[in-house]
Length: 432
Image 1 (cartoon, helix red, strand yellow):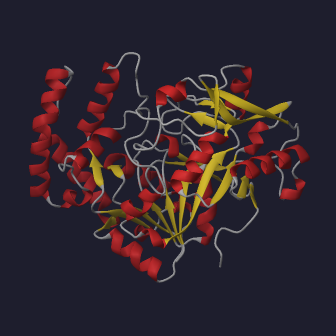
Image 2 (image 1 turned 180 degrees about the horizontal axis):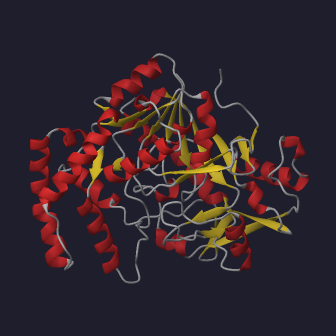
Image 3 (image 1 turned 30 degrees about the vertical axis):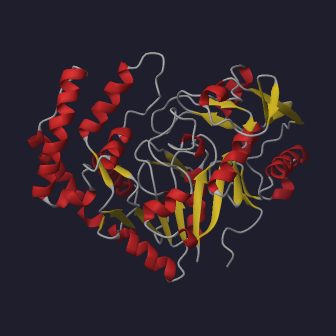
């Protein structure tokens, strides 16, 4: 079996998209397993930047099949636009390269309206949602009233589901939030047009397709969105996303058994970032944090929002390794730390005068911890041109070795820039 899950080990934005693109050279299939268009995966190939939100990051490899699994919530209008953009760039020339699960949930205009209205109604406790309708769509799935991708191709079933949904959603939007509701005929018309565009990508049983490929020995990558600390069950709740970002959810979403997974690769930056509200123990609210933000171009691919920046947090990383069952690690953007006299690493927290090494489950406790920082010598050399691990400056390799020894998990990949070629391998991805 050759199933590999690639999961974010921080608060998202770790560089999973680049890593999946690089890994896809050796993979037969890439499966996106959760989240929606709130994700933003930026890929740079030969100097050309491609930003993906719903389409799996293996799409730049024409020989790789990409699957959007049942656990994803799909903005059909956004993915239609994304597909058109890919085609205009000379990609996705064969519709068989992309498959969308019939049982994936569809995000509709009223989900976005409700998402925006709720966030606007909050005062000081804003979640920091992207406003893409992700949460309300997952709510509909849990409430057993979601419109599924397959419903787009059955007009009678679609209309019945929309009538039921709009009866409640329009009442809430109009009477509680005092905003405009939606007309079912207009939504039906718009969905008819987009359904025709997306019909070539329809997969009636993506679970069976994935299972058959795994059984045949194909190499399958499972791609998550966001990161561990944004998991709806085990993240910094309530400042989380609306789905499970953990590696185990790859199996649930794709409809396969856990024994199909060979490795779980945790992706993390050589420092830490976070978008939106919520606790962030190592955040740097000074010129050092500003330098990391500027050097790392830390602005969201989806929203353009500036990311909060801080030193690497090993307490949170060890937590991510445990809850995901991470077997191997990939350190991204270490080039961004160039230019600092010293580099900090958080090895523990202080809470109420006590030193702790485990992540508090309460976000209110996490908000009040003080990071214990170990300092390592920095480096001035530009790492973006480095081609081999042996060419890295000694302080850089010391930093990598220190982090690896503290985590007790092998770091197999080092990224020194956004391009495919700016990837240093310690060990190969697949065993054979």
